[in-house]
Picture 1 (tube, rainbow, N blue to C red):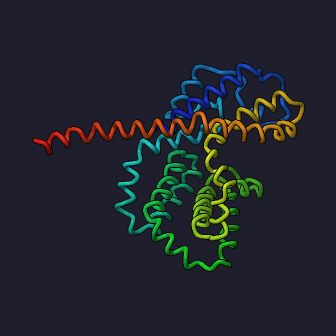
Picture 2 (cartoon, rainbow, N blue to C red):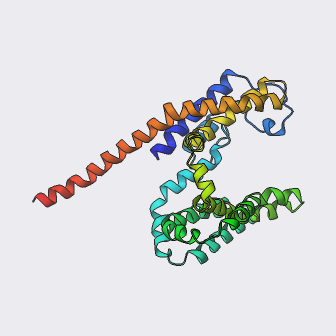
Picture 3 (cartoon, helix red, strand yellow):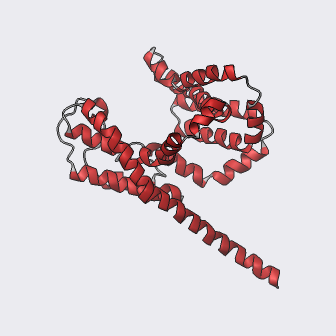
Length: 281
């Protein structure tokens, strides 16, 4: 919770400062920009700072962090449940994919997002078995698996494009979960991709990715309102976001990791003290 909330609070402060310091006035061409908030309201601020009841939209990527927070609170339940059923991972994962599809079809957020984390927990608990299995997959098949996974990840958008409607696009999110799982498996088992992911550049992007996720949208929106064209906003927003993401990681996220470790050590010492006293007596 420390690792999530400390960077998230800093990101909310950053978003608020940009909204206050750079007025979002006028009518931008981009429909996406038109949906972004132009002022800070107390209700939006409270929701963004807590996230449990939903986000306030001051920085739109925070919508997904709500589910990160809820998952973090429920981790013992997830792990306990997955351990009991870990010997039947395939039917289990298929069931979770089905729940995501149903949640997307009926627009039920809890069914749509909560099962995704369970798939990750099951994969983490069975990672050694997965690696042993992936070692037997022919190298020539990995390119096909990766390409199919990318297409599956794009299924909801493709469904909208071909005229499938919102409900079918929502149901296709179950297929997107399959695609995301395939991408993770490819990153674990496809040796050329593994080697690339271990390079310094890929590691740097991975290291700052959470910070970049938190700060990029307020930067792009601010530039979108300040510059004459969306193209200019994107062209300048990309390098600025990378620079800000790297700085945010160095001065906010990394210290939050250290703080989380100190909190954990303090918690462990307080839990172990009574046990030591019992042993001593």
